[in-house]
Image 1 (cartoon, rainbow, N blue to C red):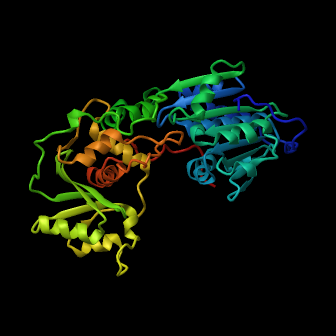
Image 2 (image 1 turned 180 degrees about the vertical axis):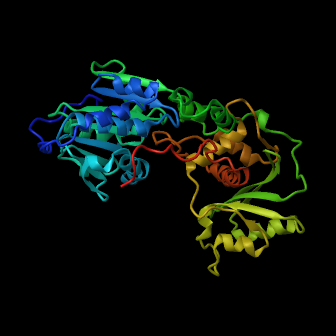
Image 3 (image 1 turned 180 degrees about the horizontal axis):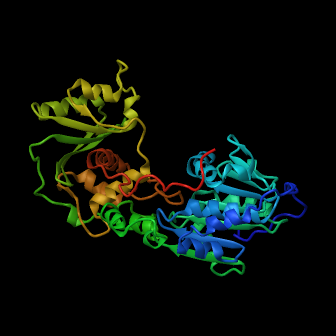
Length: 442
């Protein structure tokens, strides 16, 4: 459906009735505007009814969103203004506390911690919503809306629910997001560049002005090129096709070997085949010098094989985190418990790693955005090499859904578990807590 879909005929619900004003909200709102950065001000000050912003990490997307919502609410008494995040939980964790901190207590008439809503003294309301259950949002007449991280909000939420809700009041909408491949946000962005009443903006992280250049350079060295361009340069990147596009002969080295330190083992539990990689950590590089490929086996047999092969060595296993609870033995022991029984140390988080983090961290080692290679594989690890060269994303699926049909992903998964724990490169660009907000939390 087109980005500019019209709502069906018929009137929608009337907006909230305004209360009598005791205090002028506009001077307060103007003070918030004065605190915006130059790029934020360019987006805020543009008169287009619909605005789309593709921005790099730490641009200040949420702060800009809340300033705009407060200004809208101050300008039109009795208006209904929504902040829409991908989920209710995201709206609460990202924006609710910040919104309450930005509005002084004397300017609000009511607030609801469950509904995530505040009513100002002029009768205007600001409500935070999640786009994951968008059918429950039907039936409202909206004055204005901001879709934060719009690339992760379902397309039907905008096209079938939010766009019609803006029709009777001719409300405005701002779409703000870091790109997420060539999904619906990209389609909307391209349409908006050619439609009257729409305006597009794009700023990278450095242009946003909230992150120093040295932090961006640190991220460049710890991410693969595609991910860096998407997350920090606000560039639309394709994540279809090969999962590890930079893997090449540069990563294959027949000189890598057991370095004599701890034996690092990345394991993926499977019924048909027990798969994994055997590695050494050499400084900030990973040397994969052998692999595990045992058909119709189980965790006991693999651990016994490792212990017999390396009888007097420290072995550290990085298994699938779900093995903490999974029981594959007749005695009812968990996979992690079985590994420990053989004197092998287990390193795994309490919850499964995000697939996106696992793939990004692996791609960082294969080759980062400045061309540095930090992972080398011996030719004897044939299944591992074949996996790195052949595993693709599932056709027609969302980003980061790997096609498991060829059965080559097991060694890659095991390697990914090890990389995330042993190489410690999950989102290293996070720069700490957000800046202090205007006002107090109430």
